[in-house]
Amino acid sequence: MSTNTASEGFQRVANAKDLKEGGLLGVEVQGKKVVLAKVNNKVYAMDAVCSHEGGPLEDGTLEGYNLTCPWHYAVFDVRNAKVSDETVWATDLSSYPVKVDEQTGKILVSLQKQGQTQQTGAEETVQQGKSRQASLEELQKGYYQEEDRKAGQKQQFQLLSKEQVKGTDIMNFKLNRGGLDFKPGQFAFFKLDGVSDDPKGPIRHFSIASSPTEQDYLMISTRIRSSPYKQRLAALENGTTIQTWGPQGEFVLQEDKPAVFLSGGIGVTPFRSMVKYATDKKLPTKIMMFDSNRNEQNILYKEEFDRWAEQNKNFQAIYTITDEEKNESSKEWKGERGRINKEMVEKYLNKERLDTSMFYICGPPGMLNAMQDLLKKDLNIPKERIKVEEFTGY
Image (cartoon, rainbow, N blue to C red; front, side, top):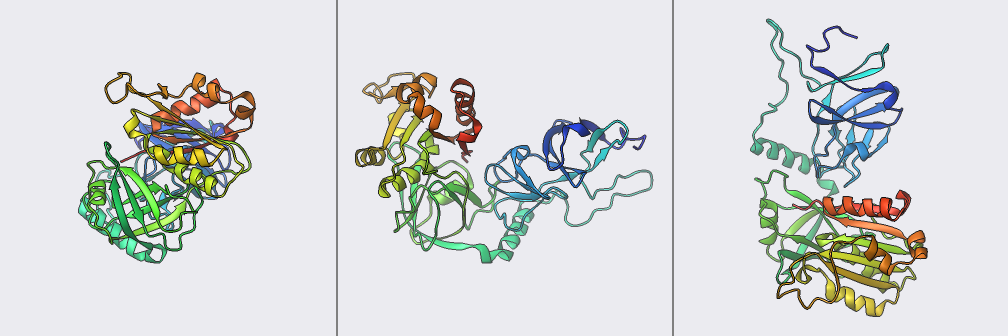
C-alpha cells in the first residue's frame, strides 16, 4: 500500500472480512454515504444514495456488476456507477477509488472521483467531457437527448380526466389504458413535457391505483405540491399525451396467503388496486387493511373501500385518524384514533391471522420505519412475510 495514503485523501472505512464476495456494505467517507461492492474478489465504491428517490443502495441486490436499488429498481454498474440504459428514471452516480491493504485487510476509499487526476506541482488537472459544474439547463438538455435515444421504450397515454379530492390537496388522474398489462400493486414512471426547472427532473413514479380489472382507464392519485412537476401535472388539459414507462415493482398481492395492509396517507394507492382486483375476481384471499390518516377528510377512496367491503366478505377496512384535537370535523368520528400500534392490530387479528398473513406496508418513510419495527419487534413477524413499498412523495 502507498505510504502517502493520507495525502491522497484515502480513508479507512472497513476491513476486508466485513465484505463478502457478491456482497454490499454501506460506509461513510468524510460524512458522505458510500456503498462498497465486492465482485470477482475486487472491491468497488460508489454513491450509496439512488439518484431517483434517494433509495439506500446498500440494501439493494447485487447480480454480477449490476446493483439494483431496493425502492424503484434503478440499476447501476458498480464499476463506474453508470445507470443502466433500461433505467430511464435515474441518472449516473459517482464511483470512487478503492485500496485494499493485503497485509492488514484494511479497505480505504478516496472521495476523489474516478477519472480525475490530482494536480501536483506543474501538473494540471485534466478535464474531459463537460464540466461537473454544468448548469441545470445543460444537464436537462443532456437528459432529454438521452431520453430521445431510448424513445423505443416509451408508451403514450392520454389524460382522460382529473379530479380534486374535496377538502384535500390530492388529485386523481385517469388516463386511457391502452394495452398496458400490470399486476395489482405495481407502479409506472410518467414524464411530463414542459418541466425544465425541477431539480428532480421531468419524471416521477406513481403507484397504479386502478385495478387490472378496470379496463377503461389507468388511474394515479397524488398530492399536489409546489414543485414544478406537480404544478405542471395539475395544470394538464384533457387529451394531453404523457410518456410512460412500466409497469415496475414486486409489491404485488400474493393470492395464496391472507393479507394485512398497513397504509399511511397517499400510501394507500396500491391497496386500492389490490382490493378492487380481489373483489372483482372474487378471490378467497382474506384481506385486512389498517389505513391511517390525520383526519377523516383525508381518507382516500373511503367510499369505494366501504362499498367493496360490503361486496367482498373477505375484505375489512380499519380506519384510524391521528388528529389529537377533536375539532368540529372529527368529533363525530366513530372509528379508531391514534397511530397503528400493537394493541390496534391485535384487536382485529387473532394469532392464526398473525402467524399466516403476508404484511404489506406503504407510506412515507417515518410511517414505514415505525410499521416495520411494530411487525418485527412487537409482533415477531419474520421479514419473509413483510413486503414494503417506500412512498417518498414530492
